[in-house]
Amino acid sequence: MKKENTTLFLNPITQQMDTVYQQYKKCGVKVKIDVGGSERWSSGFLYATSPKSQYNYVITAKHTFKHSSDDNEVYIEDIDFVEIQCYKQTEFTHYDYIPKKEVADKIILFESDLVIILVRKNSNFEIPYIQVSDIVSGNCKAWAITNANNNRLFPLDFKVSDSEEKLYTIEKWDNSKQLHGCSGSGIISEDRPILNGFIMKYPTEEFQGGFIDAVDISFEQINNKLYNQKLEVLSTIDNKKKRIVGNQLVVDINDVTINGVKLDLQLARNRVISDTYDDWFHDPLNFIDLSHEDFLFEYFRDSFNKEYKVSEAEVFYLPKKSFTLRKAMVIPYADRIFYSALIEVIGKRMDNALSPYVFSARYNKQKHNGLIISGVEQWKKMQYLLKDYSLKYKYVIEIDILNFYDNIDIELLGKKISAVCQTHNERKASKELVKVLKKICRQ
Image 1 (cartoon, rainbow, N blue to C red):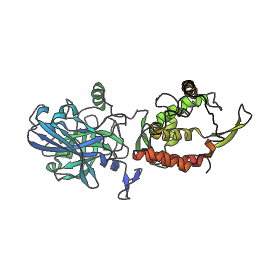
Image 2: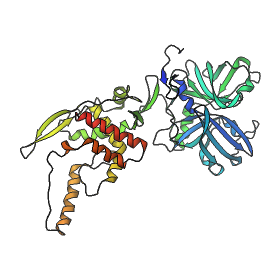
Image 3: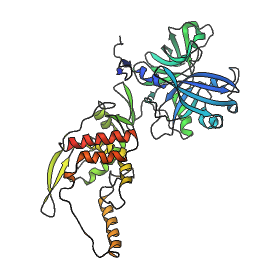
Image 4: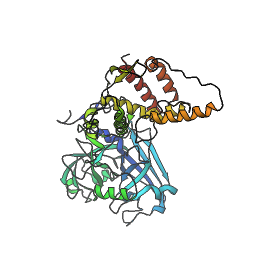
């Protein structure tokens, strides 16, 4: 039975319905540390950063890195290695290993009982985004390893006893010794994808009242330190580009999944904004009501991690100087963004596969302009080349293929594009592009 107002997800492995907090079981990690020849372990939380960041973060308790609880500080030189293990399909699996020589560069220590470990991105693990907030409301959960069984993750249930002092009451556990190892695990809101803090310890050995202390640090303090070290800060709930959608999941507009393809909708939107300046059907307001993050989140909200369908294009015939007609196709603004996002995935790969003597419709590798390089600029390049060739050859042949674009075989085009793709996401994008072109062209 699910609780009322609890959002559910279909688990692709078990085909059972998962609650919001259950998706973050993927973020529960086991941190193994060798300190001066003594192996220690604790729980931790794996935080997924944006694609622009070099590292993900593992956040855990600092006292695990000490020789003993009586030590006042962490001696980095005594740490021989740090290993991170993620919980995947009912068992812990290796995620990252930090040898002794890299420990000092990969660990960020705080005055409070907190450590952030910089870990590499691992494509074998799909880590969901989450947002952070010091404002705690309702019940909370945590995924942690414990002394009861340190080879599996246990769900811990909390009630907020004092949000100001970060004090929680744990339910269903009456033996404090069995909870050893849970320090460092992330405290997650039960019904929203929000991280509220990290378990530090239980205040008394007698475990009176079942109280658990969270680390006494705010996310503002954490972000200040990350910012000062020129690292990506944790995403707060007022982030404009990374938002909670439908109380279900956190979506980064620069890294969304639509129709199985990871896309950067913001970059695609910026490309479209630039391209619309030259539209023959120019909008005097330049689509100002559609050219912002709010539109992207609102319009595509039902398509994140799901299916998006483009519409058939409207067809117009525009007069040319030669007294003939050019076929023009117009698609909705949102479809244009989706198309541009697909091209963004494969554009550089396609452009690298083309001959340098192709001047038409070259992908623009600069991120601040339109999708393709200016035609005027490319025309000038071609004229310079023709001028050089005119000194070497007597003849230049000009050939114009009638209705060239109208007669391209989309299936054949898709095979050519797929042949140059190298990553799984590029291949997915090439297949999706074929579907989009067929729909737009009414094939």
